[in-house]
Image (cartoon, rainbow, N blue to C red; front, side, top):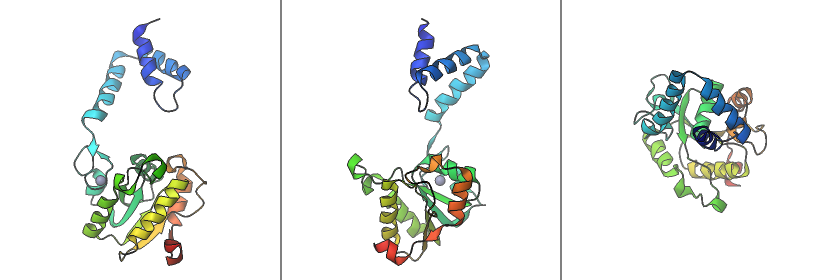
Length: 203
Ligand SMILES: [Zn+2]
């Protein structure tokens, strides 16, 4: 066997959704591509670890201290959407309807896995709301049990602010993470978002 190829297969098969067979297929495909194309891929791979940092404002990935979305003049700074992870920002942007800003929590509460409020960017969220005073905060978490608990936790926490708190319309497939929701369903859930009534906030 060719050691260099096997090493590549080993690396590729660590990627999500890539099994051993797909890894071999990819490795052999790369082997057969022109040198420049493979160099570019290698370069791009390296760059994600050297040139990407975390936006100081929203905690999404960024090449600058403040990401292009946070520093854009054309976004609606009065609306802040709380999401679980950077992938969700991509999902929302891809759905194409949302023009406000984001706040990436860095996970959802999961006591069983040791993920407490202190481990998420919640303190920074509150500081940001104090500082930027948005008029609406959308809780844009998925439909899993932990996401649900986190949504209620956040709703309660945000009650004291004079802002509209909304959440994505129900109808997201139960238990599903946002990244697996199709564009249309997400756009619809966003369009039909509901403000959180007092009864739900305190239940
Ligand atoms: Zn940002």
